[in-house]
Image (cartoon, rainbow, N blue to C red; front, side, top):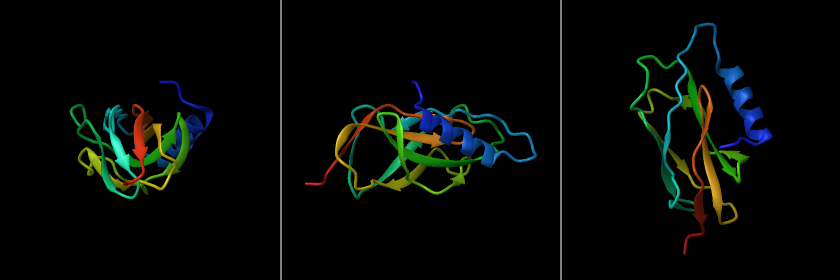
Length: 124
């Protein structure tokens, strides 16, 4: 998918901030949830998940999860966390945003992986 300018700038800033003196292995995990057809309800705790099938033996970077709408970054859903120790998931709280079907999750680490669009809806 094509990144918007703000997502690309955020990815670059996050990457520069997380690069240390030691070389790191670049890992580009695939987001497995949320995916198309997923519905998140405002105010609930949900897991953002990613594949660890191709995780290298050493991952020396931190992760952070952002919410985007139509590929434009909206807000951080998490603080930074140890990407390798997270074991393929991190729990976040769905923010109070305008309901819609064009939200995406961005997982920052070595890169900014953007997942497919999904729905955020109000609780009934």
